[in-house]
Every structure is written in structure tokens, then in C-alpha cells.
Length: 215
Image (cartoon, rainbow, N blue to C red; front, side):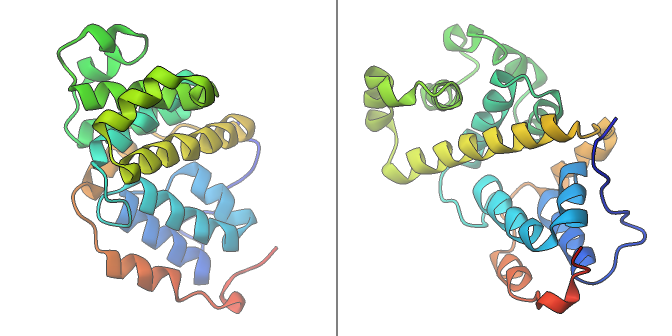
């Protein structure tokens, strides 16, 4: 059972409603984790959503290949054995064009020997696992491979995606977030492709404190 109640989308008003509205625009739906944060800490939920979307989605801040960042999120969630996030990130990866078979290969090291991924994709997956296991600091050969294939911006953004989902994995496991239906999470497919950066910036700028029902 989920430990902390989230907002009810049908009852929420003011700034809280705008958070869910923006999430529906940029992520295709509002997850139970975001509903928890919006219910308890809306000012944080506002910035959490901005960071999440800028790091993960296409056109909202990151300049690297959205697929590489998506794979990093999947592998991070798998490595942490966070079922909630593995489901979310895997469905989103399918929306980006990856097959269920490709995603299944990522559960262990089979992806390394498969021709289903490019060299850069394999490196992004391996790097996300190293970051998650906190082995990236001492993995010189892997770092050298990254430097040979990726720009600094790509390395930073893939690392950000993995690090962000390490945090999100911990939050969802700790709160025992209830997993939504598959059909609900397939709404993420409506939020692929280049998204409106101007709309995100407008979202970030229209939240005076009094609009929130601060607990």
C-alpha cells in the first residue's frame, strides 16, 4: 500500500492543478510520485517537474540524444530493482522506438553481445549501471570509451539522467508508490518528440506562493 497520499486530480486547484496540467503536457500523464510531491510539497514538486522534464524529455533543455538518456533511465531503474520506475522508463523507451526485446536484453549483460544496440547505446547503458553502482569514479577504461564516443555535454546529460532516476527510484521504493496501469503509463507516448520549450519556461514562471495550498 502506498505510504503517502497524493492529490486527487479531480479535486486539486490553483498551483497544484497547474503542476498536474504541466505534467500531462510534458510527460503525457501525472505519476503517483508527482501527485505525492504535489500534495505535500508543491513548491518542490514544481521544480522537480522542471528538472525531470528538462533532463529526460526532448527539446526541454538537454541537447543529447533522447534515446540514450532514456536507456540510461531504464538501466538505472533495473539496476536498483525499482519495479515502479522500471515499468515507467521501459514504457517510455518503447515510445522512443525501442522494442520489448531490446529492453529485456538490458536486464543483464546480454545487451553487450547483441547487435540490437549501437556502440553508443551500449556505452550509455553500461555507464548508467556504473553510475548507479557508484563504480564510475574508478572505471578508467569505461571513462576512456565515453570520451572517445561522446561530447562533454552528452556525458553530463546521460549521467544526469541516471543520477536523477537513482533519486526517483529511492523515492518510489520508500513511499511504496502504487504502480499505475500499463494503459495509463502508455500516455507517455504522447510526450515524445520535441516539446515546447516556451511552454515549459512559462510554467516555471507563473507560481506565486499564495497560489499553493501550502501544508
